[in-house]
Image 1 (cartoon, one colour):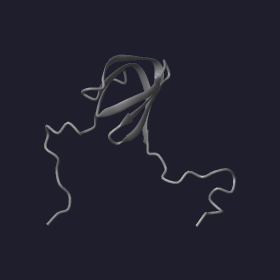
Image 2 (cartoon, one colour):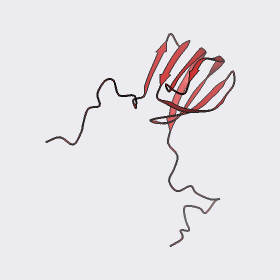
Image 3 (cartoon, rainbow, N blue to C red):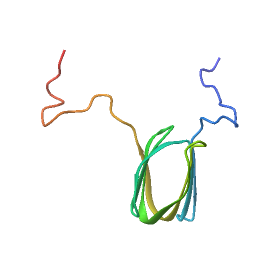
Image 4 (cartoon, rainbow, N blue to C red):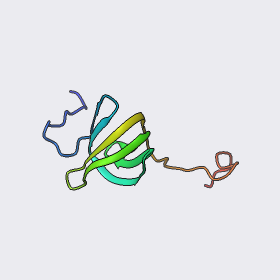
Length: 99
């Protein structure tokens, strides 16, 4: 028996990204928009923190009740990051550990 379970297609807890011609991004599964300007949009999604980099970026639609965001402009990069459980502190953060 498989441990992987497929989510129903109507599940509101899904995250999707649709990018059309690098100029129109529709993102579903948005939890929070942290910041945005013409070159950078940073948001939390159901799959981690997402960063959209580009030029002339504009937030066209933002509906957090539905978890939806539309970004227009020239998209140069999209990447995800997840917060680290244990952040290193200073130069020796990874060397010395507290017990």
